[in-house]
Image (cartoon, rainbow, N blue to C red; front, side):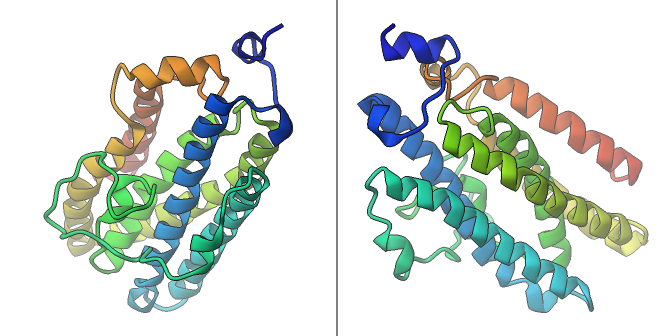
Amino acid sequence: MPIEDYLAHGGKLTSPGNVPARYRGELLRLMASFVDSELAASAGFADTINDAPGIKSRIAARIVLEKADHAEKVLSIMAEFGVDTGRYEGVHPWAARVAREADIGATRQGGDMRLSVFHYPLQGWVDAVVMNVLQGLAAKVQIGEMARVSYQPLAEVFRAVAPIEARHAELGLEGLSQIAATEAGRAEAEASLAYWRPRVAAGFGAANSARFERLSRMGLRHRTNEVLLAEWSATVDAHLSDMTLI
């Protein structure tokens, strides 16, 4: 069976040696987006640690370290494909952000592959908690999808990091619930929700994506952008309703 047909019928690959060129390119693109997003998220959240009240700063520090660790795990797989990982060892502006009022849609910026949401700056602790909740719930959906990729070693890494990333969202939800318990906190959270929700949604990609069909035949995607976005949106609505934030 040709390897393209093998993949289209649910086959799995286990080493760089039997990976077709086009598959390799799409797989590396997927991994680079995850690694760059994790490093950008880690760098951005690190800047908010000093804004965290009391013990929450320790929780924030743990999230920063765990996201960097997840990036390293995927980066090690990229290295097996001969990728020069030297740029990750040097200085790269992972904490760089566009202006707060900018609207870049889903466009990549600044020479790396991070999701567009990680180009926007955080403004204080409440804003960081809101962004962590929305993006954390998005990551739960997105990593669940990536844990099914046809390159088995990468799927195993995603399955390993999934519960840790899910815990990041849970910590954010706990913090947001406390913030929403006061009138002032709720007002600030609502403003941040209005800012971050469309920016996180953009990370799910365009509807009716032509790339989806190609990736689906390779076993690198299984559910459409629309389905993933709808799942995330319903989950967000359920949590915000519980906190009377919608």
